[in-house]
Amino acid sequence: MMEMAGRMMEEALIKIINLNKGYRLGEEKVPVLRDICFTVQRGEYVAILGPSGSGKTTLMNVMGCMDSLDTGEYYLNGFPIHTMKAEELTQVRNREIGFIFQNYQLIPTYNVLQNIIMPLLIRGMGHREAEEKCMETIRLLGISHRLEHRPSELSGGQKQRVSIARALVGEPALLLADEPTGALDYTSGQEVLKLFGALHDMGHTIVMITHDLNVAKAAGRIVHIIDGVLSEADASP
Image (cartoon, rainbow, N blue to C red; front, side, top):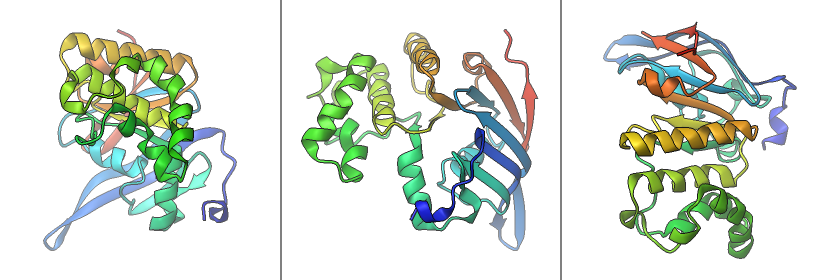
């Protein structure tokens, strides 16, 4: 199905052109995103910074193929997302994007290993092969000693490392992080940002959504969103 979508060869990993998105409120259509134009090159580390109600969550949902745009164009790794149907979007989402959430979204009845390999099992990979494939990532994240533990037995920082490992094992083109330090104390948050920096140095493309300027400054580039309008900003301290 994805092959039939007609991949476009784009230099940029993400290319968004004149994206508009709104929601119905009774009889009225309320605009949320307004003529968004946004490009992310492969290997970039970008922070989208905005206050509550700015539209950053809606933009993340569109970028993550979890919500549709009303008008405009969106290309992700060459795929014309704006032309795709729900089944095709599910495949793109599962293969091209690794999600990292503020609240981790780990399955509480699964242990660490089961949570990490889940995306590979969903793709149809065998259990043993999935375990072998993810061991290097598990070692990289420093959680080898926690594989049999359930999420309730982990600290917030450890839960986020599990979440990051789960996002990485499928070798996605894009890591999309939603307020990744929002539920963590300062020290754990700094450790996660340091890890993001290491992943960026390894060549991963990261787009991070945040309301915190100090968190955003960890990225190589900051983009502001206010009232659904995007603008570039200098990331220098």
